[in-house]
Length: 119
Image (cartoon, rainbow, N blue to C red; front, side, top):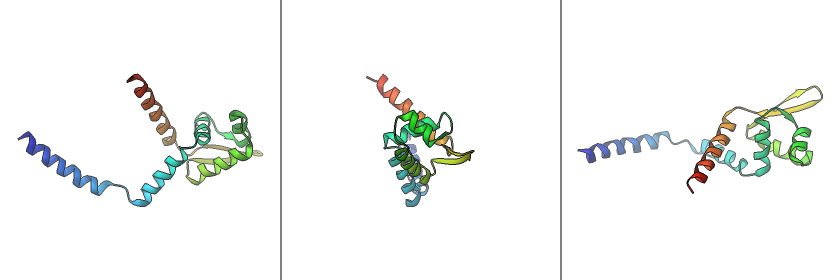
């Protein structure tokens, strides 16, 4: 009886899986976001912006990098809608587009901590 119930549930899950997988366009967007997370400078920028909105100069000073390299990385992050900007006086300040981004990072940190505790 338990085997029959498992098979029914499994077939139901399989049918739902086929219907619920994102389309290729959505998957492509997801892949591009993870590619952006694959660069240490962009990760540092995201973590800094999780604390407070910052200008290019403030990010460059915080990370010890040139403003041009920070501007380039911010452009990548902005194209992926991970950061947005707003003018404040003479400066443009960048911030995370939403809190989902930092949630991903926090869950990743928790995963790393769990893995370290398993050893």
